[in-house]
Length: 207
Image 1 (spheres, rainbow, N blue to C red):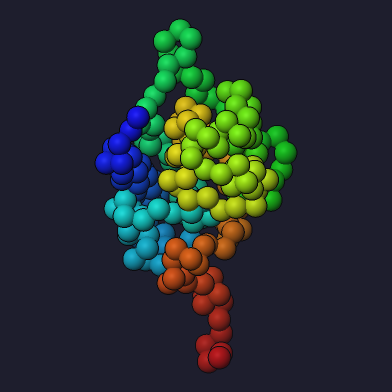
Image 2 (tube, one colour; image 1 turned 90 degrees about the horizontal axis):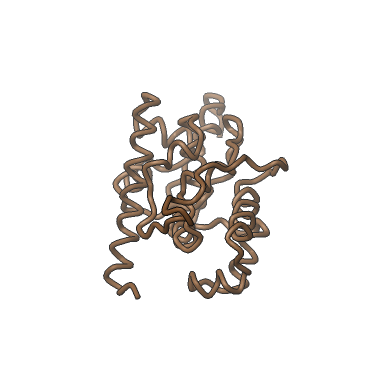
């Protein structure tokens, strides 16, 4: 069984890899942290912390950042790997291709819930079994699958480690919203959220 120190190390590593992946995607797009933050509606300092692996972004904020890069979520997250990789029946990693959700879903939380349910059933686990293996409550998992929660990245990785599904594979289920259509970032984890779009359209002298 993994020790507390090992679990903490894995969490830190997941956030480091996520930060590196997001920074690489931003650099490929050719924009600064300031521009990324402004276009995503997030605080510049917060984005810097995410890129350094110091913050644990929610799904909403993560998707808002990836929207700005314009790259497919699965491609952005391809450098983020599982810490404990199981092999398939022939000694090879499990299937690495997933189709995008066939049903048009409005929110990223709904896309997450749909993807989670599909992957859980793919490996033959019940909600109760997945809850026991992840240490999350059955109610929590039910809310995630119904699209009523905005999970953090570490919670996502906690689930994917059990399902043995790489982030790049899991996020193939997601389709980016159009520019400016991202959900409101989570205020709880980014107190300095900026409404850049609103300021850009504010007339001079308006109060």
